[in-house]
Length: 247
Image 1 (tube, rainbow, N blue to C red):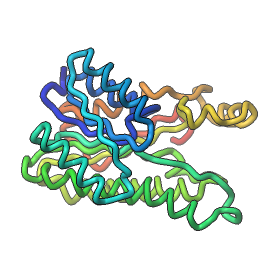
Image 2 (image 1 turned 120 degrees about the vertical axis):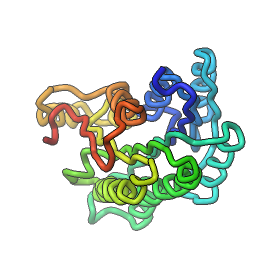
Image 3 (image 1 turned 45 degrees about the horizontal axis):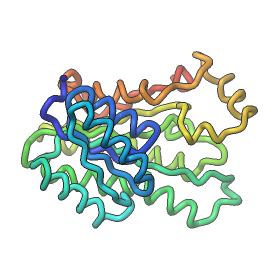
């Protein structure tokens, strides 16, 4: 119960990596604020599951690309718990296509959610964290943010931007007791990768030295470590979880 008494906001908590993180942090003793945009049924399942295990789980609907909604979700957290100890900046989307076919709105929407949305969440939680002089912030970036990928220029740009944002925030807040890090998953078995054709999946596996995709729980374990006091001297770092795809 290394996170007992802690309050963790997890964006994009309804499924995939976000849900695995929420479950893992709750297992470690944290109370959870599960942020979602559309999938209310899945979040209701998560709330019921975590509360059956003795944790408090507050679900909040918010579009992280809207600053006012982000500020409201943080205020809901403060009203309920009185503090914010951990932010997991996870919410993200894809709009994949080649650059020559990419519509301006596809570029803008991905950047708005994946990068600007993370900035809004970061800014909103650092206000109470600065008063507390403590906090743990973990960004979920991607291997694509460091390698690039054909057909994902918008996604790659957003995730590369997340790394720069994380490193800048780590430098600004380290002296105030706030640690900021990132986890960069490779190809993980989620709804997003399930939509890939078998041919594409086979081509991906050929590039991964461990010859398999990861699972959300493996990402969640690294996030849990960074959110705990065991990572007390780590800030400004990117932890890569990709089976050797990027070294």
